[in-house]
Length: 343
Image (tube, rainbow, N blue to C red):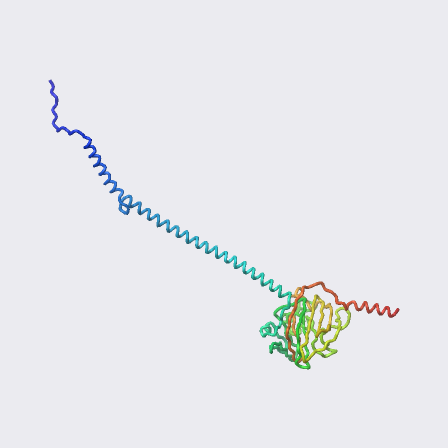
């Protein structure tokens, strides 16, 4: 008969609720310790420490990026501001240029002072040929030499308009004339028949006499009638000058001369007297700046004695269609009167 086997080990104690609770508490404590060691405290070697350091790194990187972006924005703003300032500067320059042109236009419509009595205004004058010029007490003083001399305004060239000046002879034997619309004396002069051939004058003063027109200031008739054009015949034919009134040159007071130019029409008034008018028919002389860019100068030719100038100005005018002076109708009237006389 078989017997039941006998147990050799000790019998286990029964599991109770308290025992289970105690074991669970211990497990929780062990896990807590494990988690603390693996995760760690902020700033430590664990996971929290690494996350904290990563957060700090990201924050520093973000600040650096924001700083660079702010710097670029500032530079871009400065650049755009510079362009805007440059644009405004250009606009300002254009506006200023426009104002200067407007002022120049306004100045062109009014008198242009050639010599206003200041020593600075004499800087725009030049002396060529014989003789000399100088500044003396608000006056432009011209003294002649052994041959023809010329003092002229080189600061600007003129076309249609009115030249006005005052002059005072200082010697009884003075011989001078006002020249208008002549070529630049410093440039070669084209040949009358062959313009491609040009000449340099030994005495540049003669350039004014040969290429422009000169008005007598001397009082030596019949060779020189005051206020009339040199080398232009008196009469009523083509190219002749009409001498309507006579004027005397004052040697003890200032004389006033006015030369009006419109196209090829010239008129002279001396001391309030209309002394000469004529229409130029010589295409070689008295050219406008449009026909010859080297033409349009004004000045004083002098041969003998001493003369002073002051209040020299030019009043430009718009060019207008050439009009023949009234004296051109004289031959027809004279012819009709002669015909009536014969009848």
